[in-house]
Length: 179
Image (cartoon, one colour):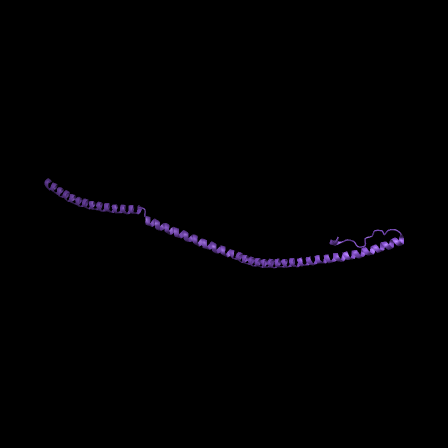
């Protein structure tokens, strides 16, 4: 082999290596372009996922509000049930108290009617007592007059027999309203 032949072989080898390198570079260029488009796609997906997803946030807030409101309602109903269970004996006691109060009110009404009747009867008794006192006074006056006449007679007889005046004596004391 001659130097020219060697140079030609070398050139042919270099040309074939350059062709392989060009093919590799073209493949590499395609791979880099493909990788670039994939990176752009991933960047778009990342930026889309980093954007605020308002519909999801609103749905989560509504669901949270519903859960809290439902829990609150359940607790309120449970408290009301507990309160109504503890209030039931109080309601029964109040009902019994109302019944007892009505009974006492009826008794008070009967007593007030009885008091009015007693006062009416007492007024009648008081009137009868007044009449009896008037009659008693008239009887006492008549008795006093009769005793006065007897005293005068006794005084006359006493002075005739003893020759002195009759000592003062009270035969009928003055008692009551007749004085």
